Length: 180
Image 1 (cartoon, one colour):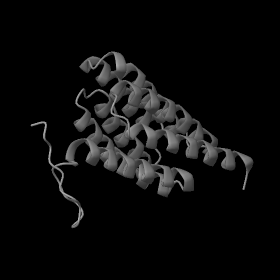
Image 2: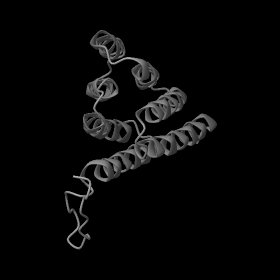
Image 3: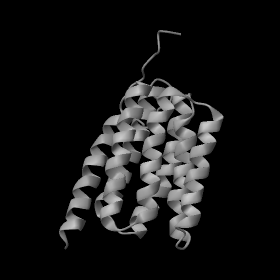
Image 4: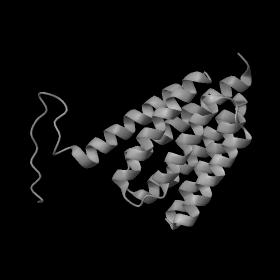
């Protein structure tokens, strides 16, 4: 194994931890800051792996999280979507390269959605595409990272939106929401 591969996997692991933490935070601003930091680190991971399209998309998608703190304007959202699609066209290399593009577009919709619940749904779908991409480009830590990020996101979604309403486990205790 080359040292670049090892460093890429270390960076992917760090990004994974940041993403997992981000999905357990309810504050939109802090979540978006952590998503930015994770995107920059994950983009560098793909750079070290020699996957330019995923690198550029991660950097662009990382920056959209910072921008989305300040605005949810449709024109800015469209700029990021067109940028990601343009990167996808320039670096197209088979159907595998379409996965980060679609994931990036869904992530952009998530970043510029002011509704936290909808943001998490978009991200869950985007992450499923990234899991498949990471399997196909063979990045073991990125696979684990995407899976843990997806699981963390689903746990966060459950905690924030269904904890008192949906019983996933047959012996889950009943909680009553007294704030209604």
